[in-house]
Length: 326
Image (cartoon, rainbow, N blue to C red; front, side, top):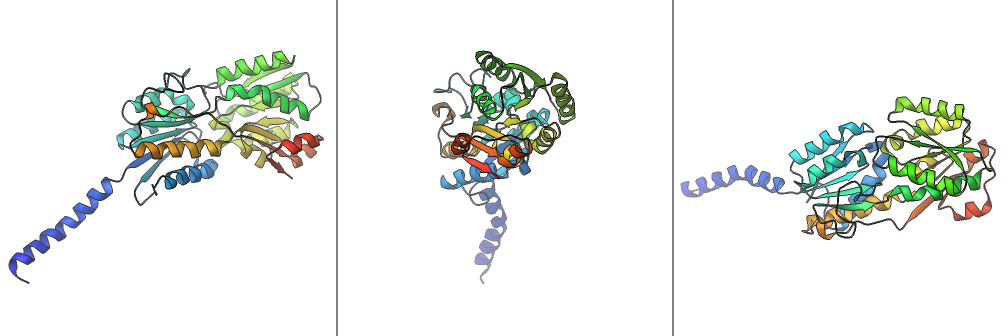
């Protein structure tokens, strides 16, 4: 090999790692922030990734996904969001992060943000309107407060008229205040007495159920909250120990032994969020992507739990269920 060719060869070889590094650093990074845990949300990660794949983005090939999980410790969400901003992600997705509205507003000043939320993003100050977000943040909202009347109706279909029904909420969640209002208003319309129980940590679950027993509430509605989803086995076990019929917002509770669940499809919510992240990676602006609202709602009934509680589930209700667990 002649000297000039040898020098060119060596120079090119030295440049290979640099070129590889430049190619790797050019790969866009999607930040995935969640108040829940990998164990509780593996199916949601799968459909989120599926939506990205359909948009042409495959993790490890032409996009990287960095995960940050709070595992129900919702106070960590601002810190985790800051880590993703420092990582210079191309887009940040935030699920089960309603308590961190301030951190999401901060993030949106730096990177595009897509949220999957159960709160009203306008009331939370995240966007100007659902149809025209107008900033650097968009997503999918369930606005769960509107579901309380339906959950009360379903619960009363399963049990005889009862003097008192309890609602369990995490007071730190942005959805807690509207949930209380809608729950109380729905109960007032059907002349149902209710009591609201607070639990902002797993350590407060026992006290909440003790209050439920003390008040002699004979049924329970569990609100949508990342803490409750992460600790659903504990809540289902407490409901079983106290022999109290309970309705939840996600089918995972019914699958874990809860009596009944009714709510918007979380799987669909995460899929649509993945679609939006894919569109933003291709150049779309969050301001031009209206907030989506759910069109699919899921009803799941656990017949084994109903039998243990001595409840006879009407065939009409079974016929309406999307999933019946024997």
